[in-house]
Image (tube, one colour):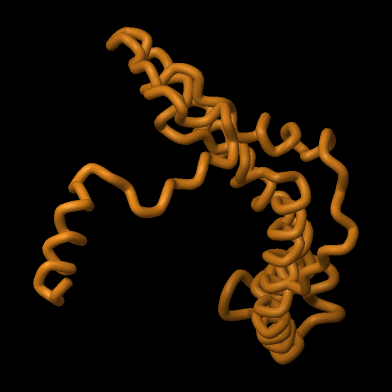
Length: 179
């Protein structure tokens, strides 16, 4: 056979619809074997409101936790700056006993400066505490995708990961992260 006949033979035996490499099966046999069924319009709106309310509640929980952690960690800075501003003669100039006997303008200025200097490391500490607590409690797993409202049969994300706090699954003690 000549080269021209071999090329024609190869081109004729292959069709456009044949697959050369078979596709791999999905890892999870429950997911996406059949097309997902869409919800009706009313059910879609109801589920969308539920998902939006749940995501808002998760956001509020995260904000309250962050505010509580920052308030506790930054309390020394708040106290020092408060007393510095309260006792300085050009700011509030309180008539309290400790302002007259212990703190003068120079020491009040020193307290204000000290408060602002120690604020930045304490903010880093507070953020590290919040991030480690949010990771340990799986707080970001509480946010649900919008596909939960549109399609039937979409599982809750936190349910797949082992519960809200990850209590169902075993804690992996070998994985450590430095913050």
